[in-house]
Image 1 (cartoon, rainbow, N blue to C red):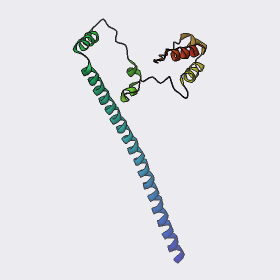
Image 2 (image 1 turned 90 degrees about the vertical axis):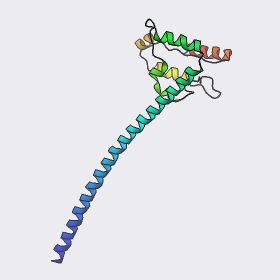
Image 3 (image 1 turned 45 degrees about the horizontal axis):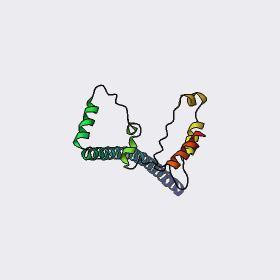
Image 4 (image 1 turned 30 degrees about the horizontal axis):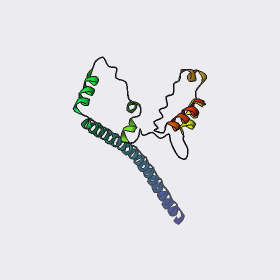
Length: 157
């Protein structure tokens, strides 16, 4: 009889343990779902902050322009005959979040990644893609000799 009683107690504990484990797994799943939802909300907040900062930057730039420049820009942007092309910010909106994002970085003392990057890009292209592709490199460098040497290196690629 005592043995049976011990077996019943063990069964009860096992059932309670299994129920507890199921509740824990359920709580972990719910926690994971809430975490994903919070990450989505955080991404939305970051995007909204970046957009707000971009608008602030645009307003600051607009305010710094002369009245004549503003009028010219207003007339050009409202002209129905002008083709509005997307800017780099249209294709890479994350650059709006960083004020110095479009600063040139070709001339580096240690190592320039330009040739490595272009070589990597071109090695992935098929022959037909290479025929159709145009790669434009802006060498925004005040040292003319350095700019010429970079251009010569690029021609050899």
